[in-house]
Amino acid sequence: MYSIKKLFLALILLSLPLSAAYTVKNGKVMNAEQVATMSVQEHYGLLLEAVQSENWEAVIQQSTIMVHNFPDSPFYQEAFYFLGLGFFHKEDYDIANQYLSAYLKNQTALQHFREAIELKFQIGEKFCHGYKKHIGGIELLPRWMPAKSEAIEIYDEVINALPNDDLAAKALFGKGKLVLEEDEYTSSIEIFQTLIRRFPKHALAPDAYVEIARVYLIESKEKYPDADFLDLATLNLKKFRQDFPSDDRLGIAENILADMQEVYAKSFYEIAQFYERTKKPHASVLYYSKIVKAFPNTKTAELSKKRLNVLRPSEKINEETIEIGKTQNQEQANAITPVAEPEAPFTSKPASA
Image (cartoon, rainbow, N blue to C red; front, side, top):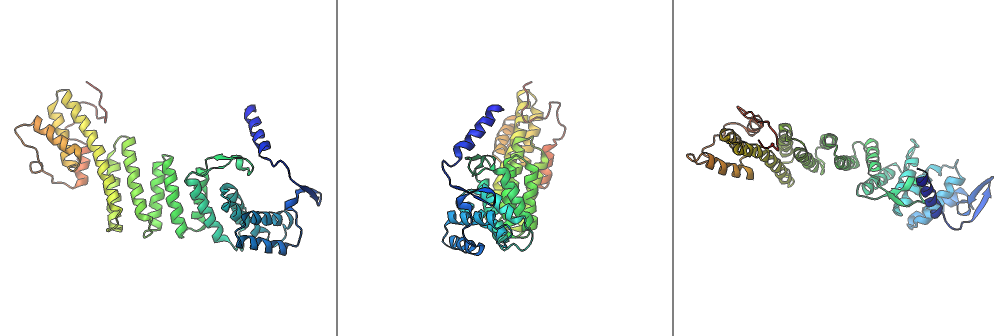
C-alpha cells in the first residue's frame, strides 16, 4: 500500500510543469495566466472570439480566468460550460465531463443546457468505445483508466435530462450494450425493452429487438438451455415482425433464433447419443424424433433423421412420416419435456454410463 502511494506521488510530481509564473492576488498565490488583466466583459469578449476561431487553448484560459476572478459575475456559470467545451475539443473527455457537470448543477436559466447534454452524450460514447480517463480524475496525470462505468452514469444523466428526446433513445441503446458487456443479461433486456416501449418508431428500435434476441442466444449457450429463453426469443421475433414487417434487420433476428434452435437441438441430440451408447434405442428414438418435430430446419434435425433411419430401418424417416400437428411453440415445449422420460438424468453433457 505504501509503495502504491509513493508511485502515485511520483506520477503527480513528474506531471507538474517544470516552470510556471506565479503571482499573489488578494492574498492568494495564483498562476499568472489565471489572473484577470481587464474587465469581465472584456475577458468574456475574448472568450467568445476564441470559441469562434476554435482556439481551444484560449477558450480554456479565458474561462479559467473568469472562474477564478469573477465568481459574482453573470458569466461565471457560463464559463464552466466553455471549459467543458474546450477540454472536449482537446479530447480531455473526463475533465470536460467534470466541468459540464459543474455547469449543469445550476438549475436555472442555463443558456447552453441542450449543448451541454449533447456534449455529455458524446463523451459517454467516447468512454463506451474505449477512451480512457485520467488517473484519479487529475488533469496532470496520464489517461490510463477505463471509463465505462462513467459512460453508464452519463447515459443515465442524458436519459433523465431529456427523457423523450432522440438523445435519450441513443443513450438507452448505448447503456444496454454496456450492461450486456458486464453480463447483466436481465438488465440489458429491460433497457432495450424500455427503448422499444418509449420510442416505438425510432430507428434504433429494430436494433434493440436484435440485441434482445442476441442476449437470449448468449443465455442459451452459457446457461442450461431453458425452454423459457426460446419462448421469449420467439415472442421477441413475433413483436419485431409486427412492428417492423419490412425491416432488413428482421433477417438478423431470424438467424439468431435459428442459432438458438440449433443449440437446443444439439442439447437433445447429446442426450439421444447417450442413450444410444448405453444400448437404450427406444429412449434415443424418442429424442431424435422430437428434434425432428420441434426443430425441423436445423442441421441437427438432419443428423437425427439419419440416426432414426439406422435405428428404425423398416421406416424411412422424412418430413411426410412425422406428424406435426401442433404449433411451433407447443412442439418446442414438448421437446423440452419429453414423454416417458427414461431413467437417465437430463443433462446437456451426459456422463458416461
